[in-house]
Image 1 (cartoon, rainbow, N blue to C red):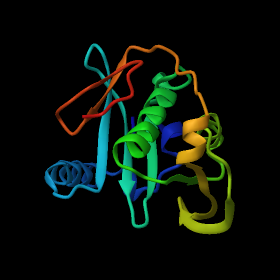
Image 2 (tube, rainbow, N blue to C red):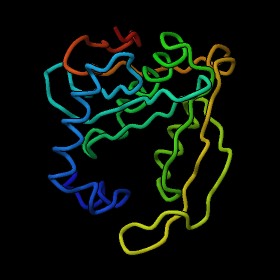
Image 3 (tube, one colour):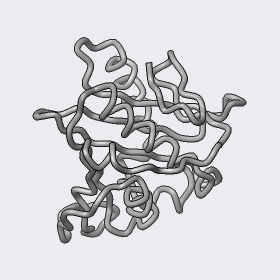
Length: 181
């Protein structure tokens, strides 16, 4: 996934290295054992067991949380990211008691921005040329956010896909059932 040039355009060179991937995997495994737990990273796999991406939620102070998702290009535009994003929002609001969830992305990542809007998030801010990566300055969309009230009032139709979201290496969330144990 990270070897794909088009996928990699939204990541720094450091973030794409094998060393960084190994460090992140070690970090995610250790966070799975933390008590109390504030960081959740989930593998997105097909029902056949193929790893196709990951998604996560980071619990912050004052009932805030941030979310993120990455998906291999061959699996994009098929409803997997929408299903994973819906599961992250449901998990944050319904199981973790979060009041506000936000996402941050490079302003050129139109697919991520579109996904956030479909999930009911609104755009709050654009920070111009605030992040240096890939030998240039890039702008960041921050505050693609939604609140518990918006989540409760909005119905998002999630297409039936053949995927599951796996927290750590334990429970599975089946398509159509955004519940994470």
